[in-house]
Length: 287
Image (cartoon, rainbow, N blue to C red):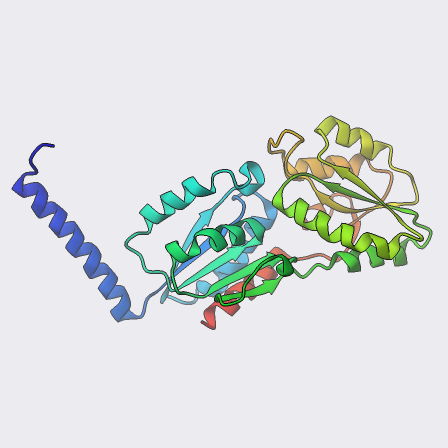
C-alpha cells in the first residue's frame, strides 16, 4: 500500500471533523432524522399517493429531515434486499435515525430483517399492511396503521350489489402483495362456499390473462386485481393493464383499485393512498 500524504490525512481529518460537527449540530438544534422505506417506486400510483400524504404533515416541521428509499419490489421482488441493505448501511453510516417509516409488506419485511442494524433502538411505524397477524412484533417497537380495505367487506359489497352473483374472480401474480391477499381470500372462501364460487386467475402470462378476462361469465364480478408482474416475474405497466382488463371484461370490477376510478371501476371500498400516508405521518410525529 502506498503512503498517504500529510495533505490527504489532513483532508480526511477535516471531513471527519465536519461530519461529526454536523451530527452534533443536529442534536443541539433538535433536528430529527427519519428514514422512510417505500416498498415500490415512483410512478406507481399507490406509492406516489402514499409519499404525497406522508410528506404533507412533515412539510410544516422544519425540525424533521426525511430520507426516502425505494425498494422497487413490484418489479424485482426481494431478491436484491441484501445488496440494498449494504448500500444503505454505507450511505447512512454517519446518520443516527430517530424513527423509521415503512409502507406495504416488502418494506416492513426489509426493516424486520435489517432495521436493528440500520436504525437500532428506534420506533418503527408501518402502514399499508392488512395481514399484521403474519408478523411477530412482540418485544419490538413496531406501531402501525392498518390498510383500511377489508377483503371480506369487498366480497359482501359485491353480494349486496349483485345478489344473483354466483362467481367472483381474483386476478393475482406472485408479488408479495398478491400472495398476502391470496392467503386472506382463501381463508375467507369457506364462508361463502355454499352459494359463491371463487375463481383464481393466478400468475398468468399477459395474453392468457386477457383471454381469460374476455371469457368471464356475465352476472358475476371481479373482486381483486393484483397484477404487477407477468408469469416470468417481468414488470408490467400496471395502469395500462388494469385499463385493458376493464375494457375486455363483461363483468363489473368492484374492488379497491383507486387508479381504476374513471377507467372501468364499477364500485368498491376505495383506500386512498394520500389519506393513508397522512395518518402514518401523524402517528410518526407522536414519537
